Image (spheres, rainbow, N blue to C red):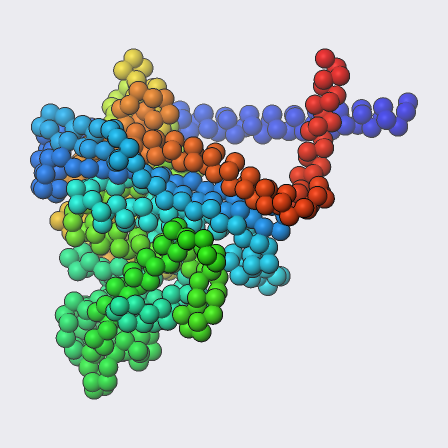
Length: 621
């Protein structure tokens, strides 16, 4: 037997063992999954306790007229796209946001969302940016102990987020009739992710907005830190005066009062325990020293300029956003003059994310001020806080006993999807879960600590006992469509988040207790015991936009479907034209060594192997 035949037989044997191993493991996993489905079948606990079926069209329309102050409003659906393509020692980045707007009408017996009717209902914002390798470390290099890590997708992803929120902010400022904003992303997670990751970046004085001169003064490090964390709504009492938010709540209180306050007044207004006095004093002496004027040891008085801190941040943000997306061809879209030393410097991914954060905050303020409904829809989510956090906490608070443990699926979406299919005969569409505060993402139940008071529960932060801000956003899952002929044939389960609104979401259904140096109480937004009118309004609007008889849009959102289609067209056009433009410049520069055009050896080898395989197949034909 030849060596070649022996190797071939050995290869076949190894392949057989691999196939058998995969088959056996897959069979075991499928058996376990079937067992979960069997345990769900016929069990109405999830549908009965956690789901709200249908909605009252008349009540939705009445609420819309009160909230929007009209029975006819404009909506905007926004989606984005991005890509990056390496060429020689440079990378071409592309990102853009595409939006369609239409009209939603609220009648006593029907909610109608009309599709865009003209080209004027379409808007977009995009940018194509080349960047050479020598500047990569400055723009998207991330330093670690072992060196610098480069991930080009960080640039295109950051630019896409920025473009989407830029489109939304510009549309809100331009169109006073715009009352519904739909985005293909989770807005609350964007805020949480960006504000957390930029903490050290701001503290180290690296943000390129620092020192920027505006009509309202020069942007300071204190401005940047407030812009990172301080989202203020006095009616919702956010930020709350606890833990890491206490210093921001103190600044918010001083801004609201507009006068000097003594330490004791601050303690009283924020309902703080005496053990928190040192933290309050640190706000003036350590945290935000340059925000205060000298006015006695126990008197807190903000500088006059602090009332315009957000005006400064927004002006600087709009200037840099225009530089990126409305580039005039001189210099580079990501290269700006450093405000501190007046020399040119590169905007980093962190700078781009900070611009995005300021725009999100600006959008939130407009939504609260003008009663604009902002909804972020997520198609595929691996979140599991409903099963692992919310429901156990509600049980600890005595809201219900529950007949048994809920099956553990990989995500809340998978659990709800499975339940809707195996119990489809008794579950009508549309349905949604009760709305709950997104701060539950960061909370773990502490069942070892018991309280005898119904409606109260002990919790702990899931990571280092840090709990996200409450009463900022609420979240729910929903399903809009099922077949009339076979109720087990259904659309997917999606989730949405939306900002809390003072007239609906400052409710006291649940009080959570946490030990952070001292015992603290906080009240998340929750609509479990009684539904909120705005919860009904949201599902009514989403249902009116999820009925188009298009397979990939049915049960989702037609406005976002159109925006996604436009984004895909732009992606295809940009991937051809932008890369072709770079290739043309490379060709004109007389770089005729073909190997240079193959950015990686793996790409070169893959191309040769593909060509050889096609040649062999053609010979066999």
